[in-house]
Length: 193
Image (cartoon, rainbow, N blue to C red):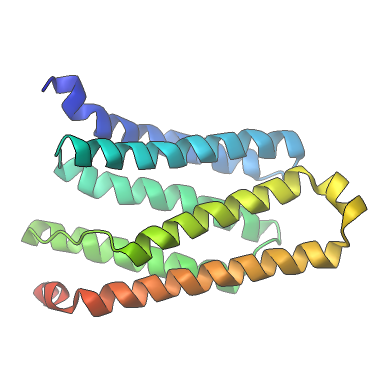
């Protein structure tokens, strides 16, 4: 296997970090054009996350660099967009804090277990959580990109309540996957002590 092929998953992971910061930067104003750019960057960054994981599994490539940087890149992207939407009054701060706590705690736990050679694989609930977060954020992007035409068709209270319901659902799935992670990995987590 060529050196480039072995490094491709890591290259994709590293590329996700500037994409995430650009995504956050363009989302801040909530203007349709900048939000569209941000959404394209968000989808591209999400795709690189999927692709680097797919290639790493397909080619059986595992690197310590990837184990450390991949979850950090993911959190920058997802939490960055949640924080921007919270800053703009779209997502309640309580929900963003609950989501952020789960993400940060699990990432820190995984990183603390790396030196002990304990790798905790992603569970189905974690994969569903990631899918839910990305889907809901994409829906929110689309709502605000097309806010003008939507406001003519649907009352703003319905739009706001739909967003709140989607975020509440995302928060519940996120917290549940975190609880499930700790319950399923009790034995491995005992190595932290």
